[in-house]
Image (tube, rainbow, N blue to C red; front, side, top):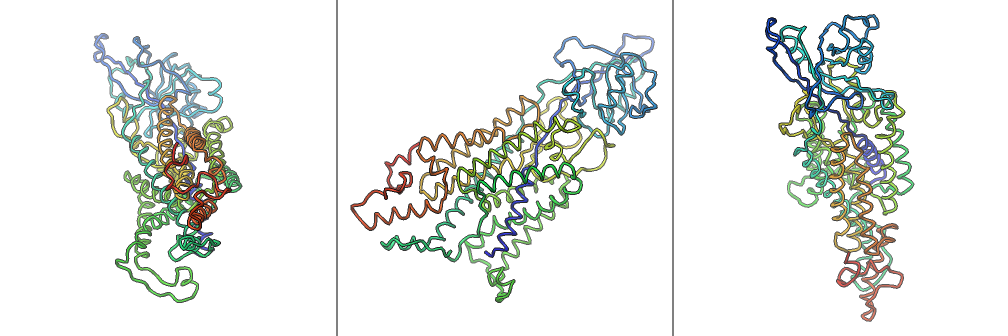
Length: 583
């Protein structure tokens, strides 16, 4: 592979890694509105009751729980023409202590709530065509308000308007508690992530091992012939393409770059989102092509090559043009283009998940971390990055929202728009639609809701597991590390889901993935007495030393042990009683 092609692929993979790390999600709560009205003006006792679901932010205001036996009824007053965003509209004939219902206007729900509270209302209901959870500024985190602000569907408000005897309307508002239901979408998402990371790390480990073996093929032949010679640096025919190695220094630079990129996305989202959509499509095309290209090398079926000569194009393509590869590239590009066109359609998530899987697998093959030291530094830096931009940045932003959530949701502020249009979102997460469970207020939002898992939450631990798989193949040991790491990754995703349920707010998945994964690997390495080997890495040197140990056995029947300088952990795997084979 030419140096230009390596640089081009390295740039594409690096940008795709950046896109994959920009993701998170936010949560809210639902409330029940019970409305009472009379049906006959002469008979005040003939009351009827209707109930509707509304959205509210428990951090912005508080409501009594729905489990409360005695509901507090208040007068409900609807004024569809009232504009609480207008400074001239503050004066109004409102019954003190009544709950005011108005239409959505062009200012935040919090600002409208402040105006309603000044009018001596006891609560505010905003009827909106577009459902959302009310936002809040930082000040409300320090001084929580008891003034309830709720968002109701405009269609439900229209039904309420048709109720008779408006002056008789009464309302009670109660919050639904523990309404989060774990459906099958979360389970499917976790299984998908584990499968992608298992396939990607397996392919990456095989790629590392085959590259090292092909590079030192002359050394292997010499050992088999009974002679120990220096390894050959000339790759053999059929060797796979070069990969990008991220050392400790590159990991630090990359973390700094990611921080700057996220800040730029926060301030210039409207301009950069389309750039990242295009880069995702390019990366997905390359990923799908790289994932299926080995099939072309395994079989000669349909092989048709066109010579290209010795010019620049011929040198870049290896001297000939493979028609099968061209067709595969066109199919890959066609799927990516189709996703770009239909990305906002209800079925767009299917292609997003498929293309994202191919992209992640190709990134895990193309970017390699050379040692446990580099993996630890990389994972810890991104652990800090994830936690900081989710939990710490809300204390610095003017609207109290984390930078990560703002970027992941497209910088979308639902409290400041008119409820129309489609907001572009960075393609940086697996999406599985929630499966209906019949829970109360489950269909509160017209838009489909999804279980999400960021690409970065699969890719970052995948780098570690890929290195571990390569380490196992080079030493010729059982897949103790990689299998254990996949199990630990699965457990960490379960822990993330549990935290999401109990804390009822968006969680940075790396907060749970990184500690569980690293502690598992460190414990196994300590038990197997291979910590120094993993920490130092350098799989090429380990491979050469292992082959020399085989060569020593060939040269001398009396020399059954490896050289004194060779660590115990790289004794040939045929020694079944070795401690290196037992956890």
